[in-house]
Image 1 (cartoon, rainbow, N blue to C red):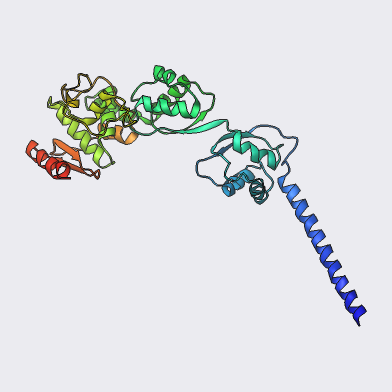
Image 2: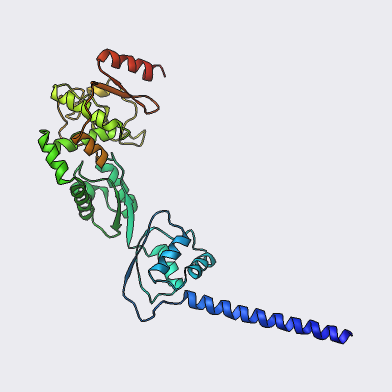
Length: 330
């Protein structure tokens, strides 16, 4: 009886070993196939883009859809096994189908050909230059030689790592030219404004307005002031004239004083009527459209309270009341 039990146990153990062996071999074959090159003879380059925020699983699926890996699951597990899940970087890559899973995984951590670069609405060219210096190692002075304030369109760009300052400035300018449609240019001319005047005021509206609802109203107020030969009296132009604030580590001084409003500068719109001589920042499409298509209103004044909400006024008395209510009382 004991012999039969021993035989049965040995049999079951043998079956289990065989099953495990076949399973192991099957998994190994699946793994080997899933991480091997799609086509060892095809070394033609394939452009592959990882966008900001994409995770390893999404990247694996996209690789499989472009036939760069045999199995999205296999590649995902490989990345986990290699500990590279958090090292995959956004960018533009040149891959090929002769690469195996390991080569592709490691390439996606350091083989970036292009770099995603984002510049923000309302930045002045010095702020863009700082960004280029940090992310592309381009000397700020080189960019400032070729950058044209107001026309370096803010957007997210895929930039070659070896791009020159001139090439990047041209990329920004070309994007500006593509965003400002022929209809917008025509409508600006019909309103009696030159494109340069539009961009100068849009660069101010970008810094003065905070929402897409505010900007057309503020643009309308500023055009009214110009047409009435009033000084614009905008803080943004004064901030531009004051330049870099070492203590605040910012190009835009937060708290302006009465002395600041006396600074001798053609950009000081508290002292000088009309538009400043050049743009003060690089506006986005919303601000440019707001200036071409402003909202008419009975208002001549505006201010933002400390929470960022805008308050309009028809008269100087109403404006002074708003100052006392929303700024001085807080």
